[in-house]
Image (tube, rainbow, N blue to C red; front, side, top):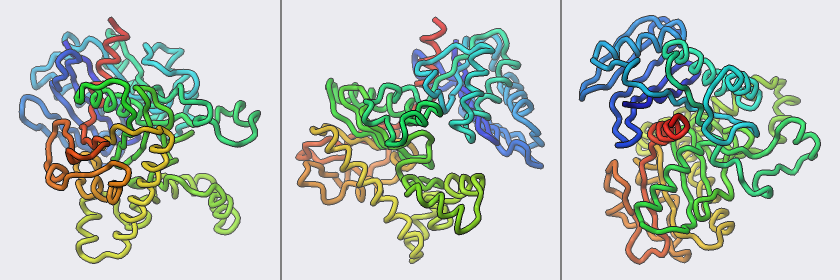
Length: 391
């Protein structure tokens, strides 16, 4: 028996069939290029990869094709799937724990689209389609913002007019919460130590940092939306709010144009023209000055957050890197923590160079702060949360 995990984006749907008890991934796949002249569905099952290229006009067709491919491979979805877990980016003030989806809940998630216009609408669409395809099982929403719901007021509050903030739900919500919670729990289990003060760095195309004291987050880098914080693949991260007004007045850009600029055409892509770290690295090796500057800005911002969270925590026990860049870019880990021996942080070059899908320590034996790489598994975390709700 298994849980189907669905992560629906604007033009793609990721899915994975997970055994929430063993943690085994039974099948996984991706529907992409939805709405384009030719779409693509890829299924990994039984050690092989199957690809289907065809027009995929909408999410409904995409998931239907994916389900057909699963069943043709021998997966009997309607008898094997016990529940469906949906990643939902923004839960606002309303949702802060995994929630069984009914029509009212779905409408509330849709209403929260004002806080996450790039994310919640495709999340809603994925839920609607999956409920049509699998109407006889429970569907559960697991929210990216849930882990950070209880942030201390000093961390969650923006210094703007309190009545305006209350009326429009303006506060720091935080994102990637499923990953930060999962990884911080894995660190505790891996080290066999409770009460840890942790910094978790989720570095992918989207990137975020968190400060966690004894399993409870006390701060995080993303805010009202996933735009705030670290430099990301296409997002600017922290920026003077005055830039928005300046672009409106000086460049004549409207809100949508500025939104597009800061969310999709900034970050590494805006500075260097690419947002793939592997390509960025090759460009730096080839002497590309823009690529080098982009990397330097990325590391500079990352180190600022590490330093600020060290102060907030008071005592720091662990720093953990996760997600695509965090798990695979040894140079990023080394540069982010370079010359911090005075703070008890020492990265071992040989350990750091090892590539593995297993949790591992990359700091020296002398380092008083343990530096780790822990692969995230948001799908497993969503599957386990879904199972708990539907038991």
